[in-house]
Length: 197
Ligand code: GAR
Image 1 (cartoon, rainbow, N blue to C red):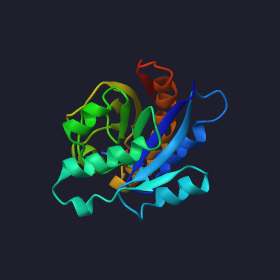
Image 2 (image 1 turned 30 degrees about the vertical axis):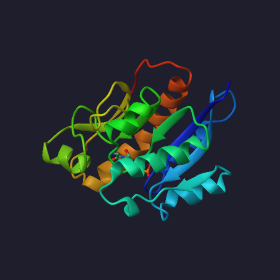
Image 3 (image 1 turned 180 degrees about the vertical axis):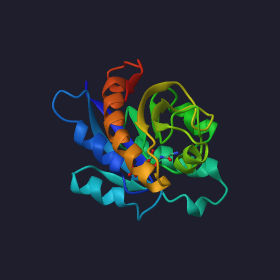
Image 4 (image 1 turned 45 degrees about the vertical axis):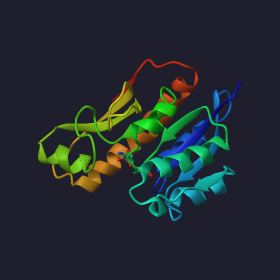
């Protein structure tokens, strides 16, 4: 049985592209949908150019009503019958209600070595702390922000003179290695963490 994957994003979608490009040959999964909360997300065009269905559910008309936004999101996702959701730069915090619907079937990539630096500005925070290495984490999504069982991590060095942007670019390259490697395992039902360095 082919595992169907929905990818949610808000931006350029370089991780999404890495995931799409990986789902070929004997890979257990195939892309079913790329969805964004922003109609202008660059990732949407990249997905469409690769022949993948795209959808937009704009969060703004829902204002503070996260539950209604998430109901609309869930409904649109279900039209494509995915088995797994990959969050790939999806910059909306999801409530416990939505997370519960996808518990054990939704994974996220975060640009830090969790549990360090949950939330935003991870690279600047690593530099400010004087860390000598940084990296990224793929984890199962639970109700707590940037938490949940770790499925993989990739480490990169922090070099002297690094700016946050330089570090972000180095980490992003590692993300493109890690996320496809984790998805392949996860789609096979294997939750053994992968550690890349
Ligand atoms: C990635 O660095 C991802 O780890 C980060 O957003 C970027 C998306 O880039 N995600 C988060 O910060 C989630 N908290 P992309 O659109 O090029 O894949």
